[in-house]
Amino acid sequence: MFNFPTRLRSAGPSLARVRSYAMAGLVALSGLAAASVARAQDVFRPPPPVTYTQKYEIYGNINFANGQAGQNIPKRYNMAGGGVMATWWVTPKWGAAADVHWEGGTTPVFPLAQSVTPRIQTLPFVSQMTYMGGAQYHWLGNQHVGVNLHGLAGASSGNFDHSNPGVSPETFFYSTGLYTNRTSFNAMAGASIDFNRSARWAIRVQPDLVFEHFGTELREFVSVSAGVVYRFGER
Image (cartoon, rainbow, N blue to C red; front, side):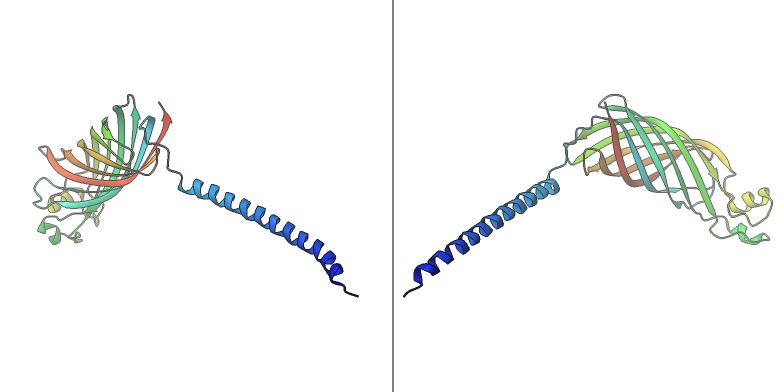
């Protein structure tokens, strides 16, 4: 007369099926949660410790400097350029370094340059190519920041007649007061500050005092460069 037991019997398999679906869902959610945790650990895992034990480093940079393009030109001029500095760390503290960089800019000249024909630019372009070698000393460093000191010496080749409009070299250099094209002594001493991004990569800022001898005496100027350091080769 009553079908109540039949309904209970038919509801049994459906309830078991729901339970199995729920268990499968829980297993799937657990797998997704474990995968998400593993992925988060990979993303937020701290970088390897900065040990400064790499044998070599390369520093690529852009640089800004001032200079004086003629013996008697009263005003200095500003230059911009770029370069590469490579260091072989012979010991944990001392390294042998080589530096090559190029800089160029426009410089004031004598008013006499405006009286020649064809007229010379009021701010002619000049450039220098510098190549030096020396030593670098690792002063201090931790996980975040490292400081090095360096001293380099070599030569700089100056090209001062880029903007010659076609007059004779004698007239150009006499009327402008610029140096003639020449290669002369060049040196720099300074420090570098490395902001470490990892054990191998760092962002560097490097101020320098520059010494050059294009004229009759040694003159001092300033330079600042910034760029990226890559360290490699375990000692």
